[in-house]
Length: 171
Image 1: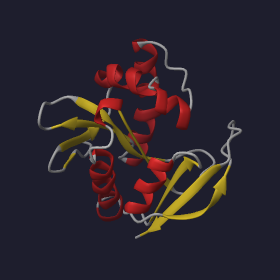
Image 2: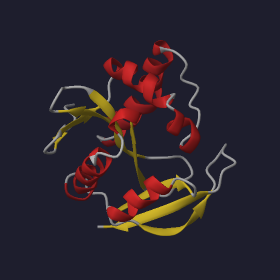
Image 3: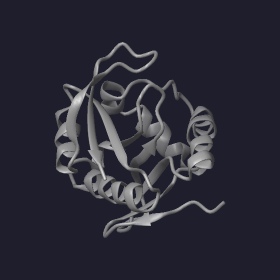
Image 4: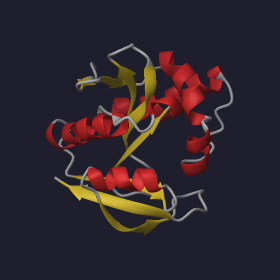
């Protein structure tokens, strides 16, 4: 089944594959990922490939969307990830984003998230999108609000002790 790839002015947004293990390894072990998202125990390229096989591919095959790799059109570098996720313990589909540190604060997360929100509502037929973040992740909260999501409450996900803020937007 061919999966959709998207573009924006500056980005190619394509489904994450095992060829992106290097990006995932670096991203999942970056300081902000560990602080705000959590340790996914991806400590090698092999475990990054396994992460794609066990966490990205099954949802992609089941729903037609999952995690996407962000590629800069300017220099063809992989700069981060953005995706639509069916998370255990969360009602509906969750949008998430993360960039390698040197690509933060340049509008890439907004650009990718905005494009995936449009795809969610107009191409995948999703009617409601949620997002979760830690209270102290001010940058993420501001981005979610800029995207039009509104704070709707808090949640604790399975196997996680943190209370997370839940943001939502309806089509």
